[in-house]
Picture 1 (cartoon, rainbow, N blue to C red):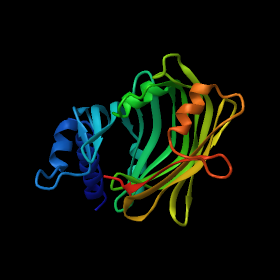
Picture 2: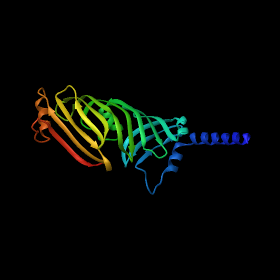
Picture 3: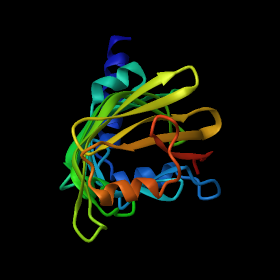
Picture 4: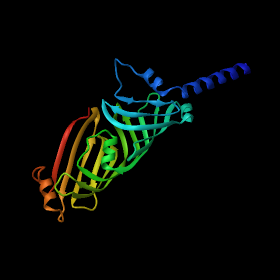
Amino acid sequence: MKKRWVVLLALAAFLATLVLHAPAALLYAWTQNPAAPAPLRLHGVHGTLAQGGFAGLSVNNRPTLSDGRWTLLPAWLALAHVAFDFQAGDDAVVRARVSRSVFGALRVSNLTSAGSAKSLLRMLGQPVLPVEGEVRLDLPLLRLEGGAPIEARGSVEVVNLTWTLAREPLALGNFNAALSTEKQGVVVSFGSGRGPLEIGGTATLGAERAYDLDLQLRPRAEAPPALVTLVRSLGPADNRGWHHLRRKGTLQ
């Protein structure tokens, strides 16, 4: 009996080693169903399951990350979890630990990034906006289901943000956003530091991927005329001087 268990353990170890060192592209292709494409897809997969990467990641056919690299954490497999350390990007590097249980949501822990706003937008596959500035991202917790956040905790800071579409670059200031999970869903609360533009308001992502944005902007006393004109183009101010940018819809 003892010899049988030794043989079974040796066979299990051999199979695990074989899978961990199998080509990641082959394993990924095997998990895909062409008739029902997954909302989250990898492109240009390379390396092995134990250590590899991809050229791009898309969510619902929208480019989201580029130049990703992972290192699997085999010890988590004993807990019925797949977990790996991950980083992506070049100029603006994103680092995180990603894990998922057999039936659970995708969990991203200690997500951090720092770099220029343009580099971060480019890495996320978003259109390049006419802005300059430095972005710092710190999210201890982010849980995703179907490509959309269902739980989040952390903060985002934007330093020395400048609007570059004007004839002369227009300094806007420093801004921040706090992410939390409330009864109504994931809530982002906007705030501002030093600078000629003050912002406030919230954005909420609730059930059925519905979002509700109410961004408030108000020029400070030292704001240059060009900035005042830009903010006023959003529409009339309320009785406290706030100009509102409101959007509602559903994430695609």
